[in-house]
Length: 114
Image (cartoon, rainbow, N blue to C red; front, side, top):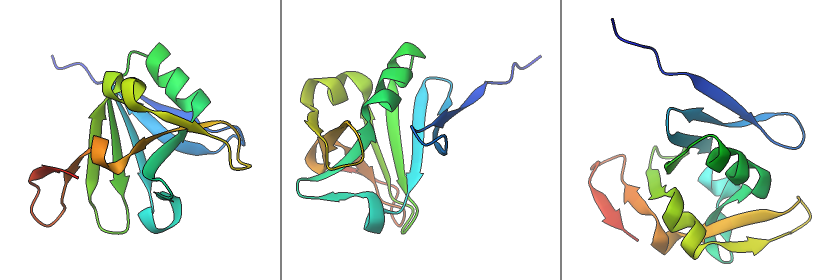
């Protein structure tokens, strides 16, 4: 019999669902137009989200840009090795610049480094 993987909803500091953990993958679905950092060009997470992911055994991070369906992926070790920190009034955040993610284009579904 096939066992069902447990999906865990991840809440931000305001108590809203902001991501989910599916097995060993943290998945965040957001509008790139609104949530992708412009300076530096990067994707960011609340620090507590990344800490919760690490404690839950997450190995990979996936961000799905809901504007176009593009998928950005990286390993958790790569994130920790190359992350930056910032606080722009929304609490402590950690980010990884776009050139450190692997992009899977929705139109081609071929991985490419940015």
